[in-house]
Image (cartoon, rainbow, N blue to C red; front, side, top):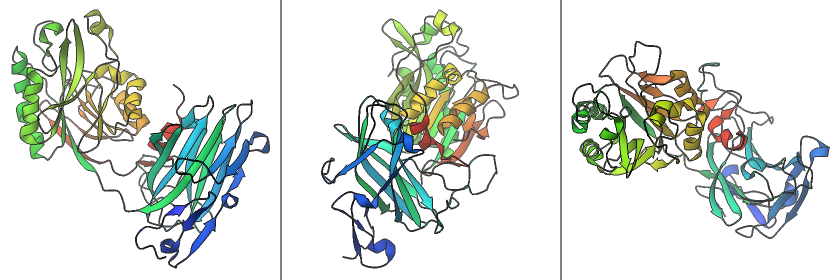
Length: 451
C-alpha cells in the first residue's frame, strides 16, 4: 500500500511492521521483530539482563526489557538503525515503564543519533548559538526526547526533530542506566515523519523606568501607560515592568503599598493589556490577610489576571520587613509559549529559574530592583530559557540591566537610559544548538543531578 504523506516507522517489536514505502520511494513492507535490535553497553561487566516479549505495553505492541540485579552502575541499551530522509522532520515516540527505586528520567533514556551514508554524524542544519566557533554549523549530536503523557506506570517519551540534510540513517538507542534492582520496559517505539513545527517568533519588551513621582499606587501605575503603548506600537507581545513599582519612592512602608491580587493595580494593567492586545508582567506587593508578598503578576490580552508568582528567595531586608516568601513555581500558557516569572533576589539562586524551566518555562519575566547581570545571563544560559529583565539600576553602573537575554545568555537588547523601551525578537520554535552538546535544554532533563 502506498503511503502518500507520512511513512510511520514502527521500530522493532514482535508483530510490528516498518512501513517504509514513502521514505524509500517504492512500495514495500518489511516485517521486523526484536531480532532486528541489538543489545550492548560500554563494557561487558556493566550489562543488564535483556529480554523481549511480543505482548505487553499500553497498546499491546510488545516489550523490550532491560533489568538489573542488586548491583548499581549497570549500563546497557537496545539499538536499531533505520533509514531516514535528510531534511525531513520526525516525531519520536515510545512508552517506557520503570519499576524499582530508580530516578526514571535518568535511568530510562531514549536517544536518536543521526548518521550519514558512512555512519558518521553529519553537520547540523542549525548554526551553533554560542560564541565558540561563532556561526559554524556544529556536528549533529544525539537528540533527547522529553517526557509527556502518563498512563498508569507508563510514560510517553516523545519529541520532534529535524533530520540533518546529509543524514541517511537514524540510530535509535533505548538505554538502561545505573539503578540497582530495577526493570525498564520499552514499548511501541516509533519514528514518524511529520510536517515541520510552526515557527514561533515573539517580540519581547522591557521598560527601564523608575516612577519617582506620585505617592499613590495609582499614580505609580499610570506612569507606565505611555511605555506600554510605545512597546505595542513596536508589535511587542510581552512587556515586562520592574519590581514593586507601586512602592518605589512612595515614602511609606511596603505593607502600606500592598493590595489584593486581583486588585486596583492589576485592574489598571489588565485594561492596558486588553487595550494593546498583549501581555504585561508587573512587580507589585500583594496583601493576603495578615501576609504581604512580593509578587510578579501576569495580565493577559483579554484584560484578566492570567497568573501570579510570589517571590521565593527573600533578601534579609525583606525578611526583616515582614515579607512572606512564596513556595511555588507556576508556569503559564500564553499565545507565544510558556511563561514563568521570578523577582529580583530569585536571580541570585539557580534553583528558582531551574524550577521554572523544569515546569516548562520558555521565557522568564524578571522584574528586578538589582542583581548581578552575569547571574541573569547564567539563569538564561544554564536553562536555555529567554530572560526578560526590567530594573531601576542606572545603565551606566556595572550592575543589573533592563534587557533581553537569549537562551545562550547573550544580551539581545538593553536599555541605555531612563525611559528606554527595549525589544528583541526571539525564535522559540527551534532549538538553540551548541557545539558538542546539541540541544542542551533537552539534555538537562536526563543529565541534571537530583533533586
